[in-house]
Image (cartoon, rainbow over all chains, first blue to last red; front, side):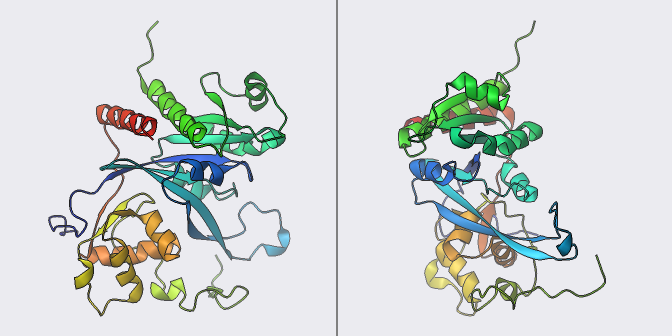
Length: 199
Length: 126
């Protein structure tokens, strides 16, 4: 029973609405850098403690072992208006914590999957996850200094991306570039929610 | 699950904070009230000056922090407490009427379209 809703908040006024976008990709793909480039606050870290009962681990020596693992998630914040706040969550690299991914993806506007062309395969699990769960996403190729330069079509083919999934080039360190990636994602979400043309 | 009573394993390898999160929540892992999504917003109903002195320090810290609305994730990050622990503490505060919370509300289609447009406009204005 929550009977406190009519009491005034010390903070005053109505509580703001919140939305979230996920920043995914392999380890070292620049997720935290990307979050930090657009966030109005220094990226924060929150931790979830998970109890694992040897899920999906090919280690027969620890069959009965129950271990507690701490998974850290970096996130940032962008105040859109006084009553709307956008949070950006970097997905934890450990792809086997599917419970955590499910929690992150639930209700998210969508995801930006960062691809590092030096290790393109590292973003496969993210792409695969969002495809399977129907979470809208775009792929942002993070153009690191010294990374092999591929054109967008080569990356698209290597990732076997659906033609509708936008692929953009970005520099995760650059605020404007990171911001543009987020805009591309939201535009993609809006476009994909428009009624499909008949015929 | 075997019938043996596994200890929580909190006295071994890693030395952590002096008061274990487990102790702060009296061993509970689920909040007594509320869902507390990562981006649910929490605000104190108590002005900082009138926070009861007999509250456990972590609960008082949450009320102090939430004088302005903050997300559950931010509360966890600022207080360096795991999300699970924060959720239990928030559940107690909600039950006691000391906080208000609003979860992310799934918006109906026209409203959702409006929301997404607002996000784009906000990002463009950055």
